[in-house]
Amino acid sequence: MSATAIKYYLLFLLLIGANLSQAQNLISSGSIGSFKVAKSFSISPAGYILVTDTSTNELIKIDTLGNVIKVIGGYGWQQSTFDDPTDVFATTLNVYVSDKNNNRIQFFDKDLNFLSQLAAENITDSRYVFNYPTCSAVSNQGDLFVLDSDNNRILKFNIRGEYQVTIGSFDAGSFSLSNPMNFAITRDAKLLVVDPPNIIEFDQFGNGIKKIKFPFVPININSTTQSITVNSKSQIAIFSNSDFEQGNFDPVIFNPKLDQEIMDTFLFGSKLYILTKSSILIYNYVKSK
Image 1 (cartoon, rainbow, N blue to C red):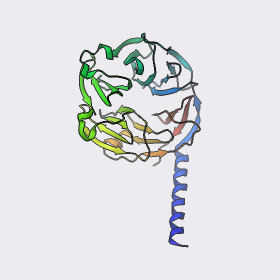
Image 2 (image 1 turned 180 degrees about the vertical axis):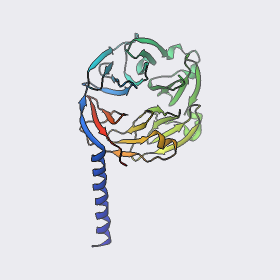
Image 3 (image 1 turned 90 degrees about the vertical axis):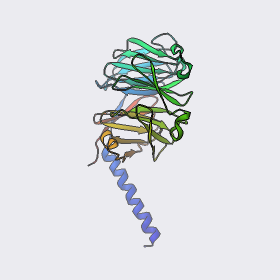
Image 4 (image 1 turned 135 degrees about the horizontal axis):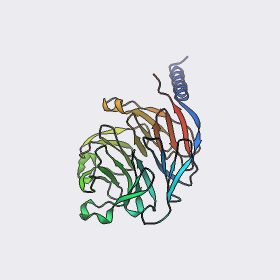
């Protein structure tokens, strides 16, 4: 056998091994939900799933069996209505929706009762006004981070809605954001910002730490206390928060070969939830030893 033939044979064995590893780690267990054009989702620590649908301008709350618990929204600019709800973030007690075309973040309690909002029109200093917010998240300290897509930056506000710091703006040097799409806050209060083709890590004060190159072009990211998931339109990367904190970045990559593009992913317990435009696909996930 020639050297070239041996090389391709070994490559074939590696690909077979990778496919077997994926089959052992990711096992389909059905789907839940029925949406028009789902855009994002979040799973609260209590296990409730919150989904934004940009076609109906609705926020839908379901359980892990797919039972619809509550639906709010519809097109509008009053409280509890939306104009392109592009992102949702859920904590134990509250839910935060990035209401993109209304230039605001709406706050709800866990039962989706309206609480308050942070609206661009109410920010008095024009330097810190955000436009078309596409993502938001709250840290364990109660600080609200907002992705200002119109200005390619993230703004940090305290619990009273007062401006604190700007992250990744044009003056951040090599850590300036060029096309930020999404971000997540890790359990040690770092920000991981999806800025294709990279993910850029910042501390909570806006200092750039490092750029992470991915084997695919990322579009979305989610973080829990245990794990971090990153996805493109067709691939998923999973790595543990503890490994990431120790500097061991070695994600498990999956290519589930779906007939729809992947919108968002979330690892909750031992199940991987994959959001498509029309439903949520569920897989049992077992990490290889």
